[in-house]
Length: 254
Image (tube, rainbow, N blue to C red; front, side, top):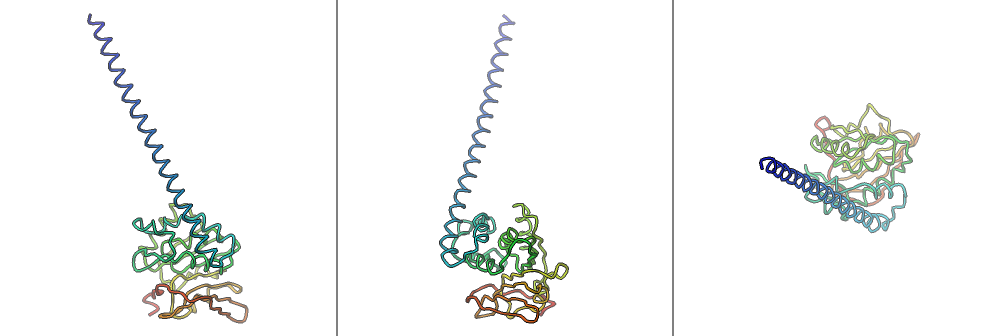
């Protein structure tokens, strides 16, 4: 009698434990499947959005560099904007990223990148890291990207984002952009993503002969300017009117 009762208790306990393990295993599998589904759905969303962005905003406006287009198609722009506005990441315009700064309109990002004419072996200086999106694009088109951001909080956030996404050839520095990055000069190309009143002479000095610089220039009225540094002169070409946030001047430059 006692033996039968003990066998019954053993079988009951085995059943309960097995059911518990089975239910939890099923739940784990279900949760994993749900996460994978959400991941696939999220990737499907941004891949569709970025293709639409490239076709309707960038290619349609005349950007033709196939390398630039391909790189932009494969960078998740929504990961470079605040979470609460990521649904607008692929829209046709700039977006706020905090501290009075913005991530530039996709077309302008593509145009400025194309104007640099990067081939893959260049050392590029970017002034105005912002969210890190422009640096991410450059890093896929050049050998190295050195990027300077005067707002320390933005520099820190961009550095973290880029590291999390696996970028290893981008070097972020919190400093005054007007000073450039002398230790690594000269640069094959320089891109400035905020508007100074005039072209900074120090940055021209840090541009290699034969190099290109792209930047917005002006205050109330701004123009996107392409600078080519030749052996005996500086050539300037106005591309289009633009509107950028002002380039912040450090105390040493005031």
